[in-house]
Amino acid sequence: MNLLLVEDEVRLGDFLRKGLMESGFSVDLSRDGVEGLAMALTGSYDAIILDVMLPSIDGFKIVETLRKSVATPILMLTARDDVADRVRGLEAGADDYMVKPFAFSELLARVRALMRRGVLQEATHFMVADLHLDAGTRRVTRAGKRIDLTAKEFGLLSVLMRRQGQILSRAILSDQVWGMNFDSETNVVEVTIRRLRTKIDDPFSGRLLHTVRGMGYVLERREEEEEP
Image 1: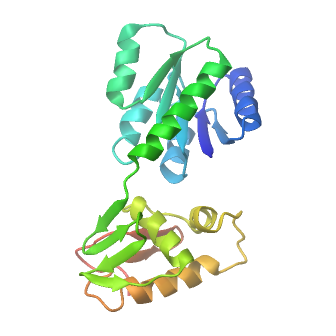
Image 2: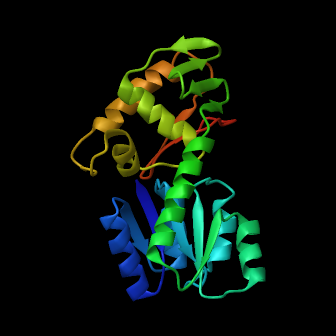
């Protein structure tokens, strides 16, 4: 269970991170709005705990930006007990709102509730052009034809389809599919990408799985081929 905590108050951030980790969560901590936004967009988290008042960019702007492409549950924190601020946060796309000071036990309960809600609402069907993935039955088809994948190939395609249009680095794919820290010496990601391409792209018209040199891979439909 992975959490992103964006909180610039050093003592509070360290306290929350320690408490959440002791409660069984893996926690990434950012103390800056711009950095926190980048982590939320590129990382994979089960929930985000986000302070309103942050350096560089405030929590409201972060939520508005995230909601254009990310459905991760967001709990906002603020020191201002103002109804207008709470309404603004919720209308921007936050799922819950807590006013400082608060009891850690309540924050923990709310985070767990948000994560349960996110699991219940998680989509099971994903489409990119004529490529369809059913996470419930683990069935993949393209142009109506069944495609048989290994467990790792299916896991890799699932991550790419859930975040279609986003460039995912080798490190992110390695963590999400193999559950291991990224090892720059291994080529397991490249090998599996190559096998996946032979099944979902090569027999069909129009490439969907693209390499972005120096950055990673992206699954999307393109009008013009950009790769040789």
